[in-house]
Every structure is written in C-alpha cells, then in structure tokens.
Image (cartoon, rainbow, N blue to C red; front, top):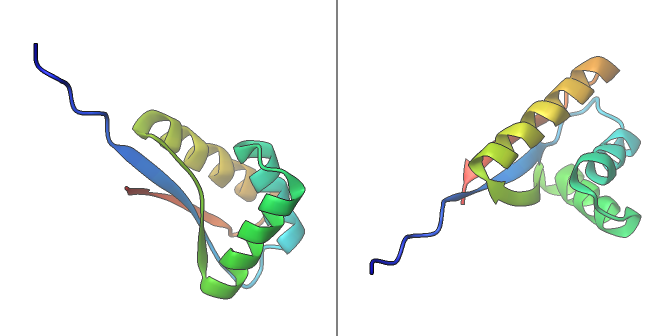
Length: 88
C-alpha cells in the first residue's frame, strides 16, 4: 500500500494599506476567520506594523474562498484591503 502525500496548504494573508480602518480589519478577522477579539487585534497590529499578516492556513479551495469573501467584503465596504494566498 502506498502512502499518499498530504494535500498542499495555503496561507491566507492580509496586506496593509493606508486607507482601510483597523476596525474593519478586526471585523474581517473575526467574521471570516472566526478569531476572537484578542487574536484579531494581534494580527491587525502585525499587519499594520509589518505590512502583512497571516490569517490562517487552509486547503486550496478553502483559501480561495476566503480570499474571495474578504475581497468582496472590502470592495462592498469601499476599502482597498488586499487579501492573497500563498503556498505554504
């Protein structure tokens, strides 16, 4: 019997900009990534200070869905927040 390799995983990353309010980033982290307020605040500050922050690690399909959901929510709210995925 051959052992199958685990499927590849992808990081979902938010990119800092000078326009999206910190409160909106916290909302995104809580709503789409189901993080509590403390963890959302920590990641938001990392994004703010370091320019980017990892929101979670998922299978390809889930990561694509998260990127699409966040991008649509940001667009609908009128914010330029960028969400990308990167291979782990």
